[in-house]
Length: 114
Length: 110
Image (cartoon, rainbow over all chains, first blue to last red; front, side, top):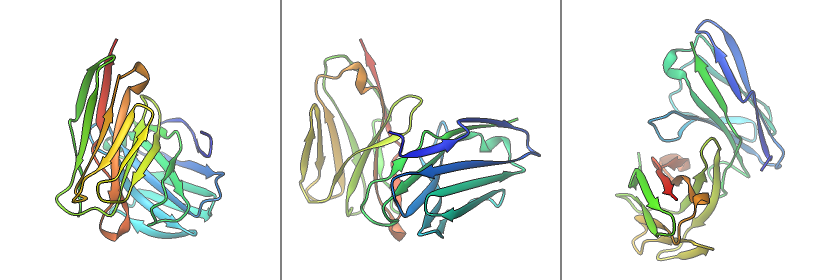
């Protein structure tokens, strides 16, 4: 399934670096999501965008900054991350947020903080 | 907020055997979605259940929604190595956002 594309697939960065994760969906959906998945925790919802408007910030630290320039693209800007931020970051999309429509996930970015 | 608990957390299954994983909630659920994540992969939507007592089948997978809509189960018959992965249930929590359970990680012994 290639409806949701994430880049890069892997990222290693130091705590003082600035980097961005990119997500693009080709499904014509109007909602996009960022999730964090770490080894010992379930999928944690971070941000929700519905029709380009941020509708959910699930108490995410400010060192994570999302950006949604249009319904097809979603970015996660990273700055001054901590070792505990090492995880798989998954992007997802759905027809609309808060509906019963299923979510379609990208392959994720495996992030390692040195 | 509303949570769904999945049990077991891990399931070791002999190839060819059946097993069941459960998703439980203390509150009534509006719906349940099931996803499968293969090792190294991403969650993939399998099915959604909405009605009380609903049962849906996908080949060797049988999904059931409880009569009280507080629990759901996924039963796999004649397990194959392709069934390896983590199975998540998900439901709408407070604020209508999708909340995932902790998942059941399935390992198949050939």
